Length: 74
Image (cartoon, rainbow, N blue to C red; front, top):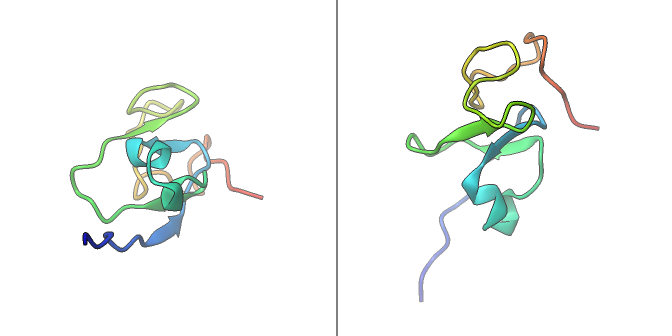
């Protein structure tokens, strides 16, 4: 029997995406991201690239409320 890796969800920009959001139901909620992997590739749904609309990199650590393109949930 295989054990699932624990998921630690943190609040993020709702436009931030990564591949596991589409294959792991636990990680499918926009605005909540598990950033425990240092190899995960993130992209912005507004640009469809690894750079946001402000031309800065996107990641859970980079996409903070002080960015002009940040969109919080709710």
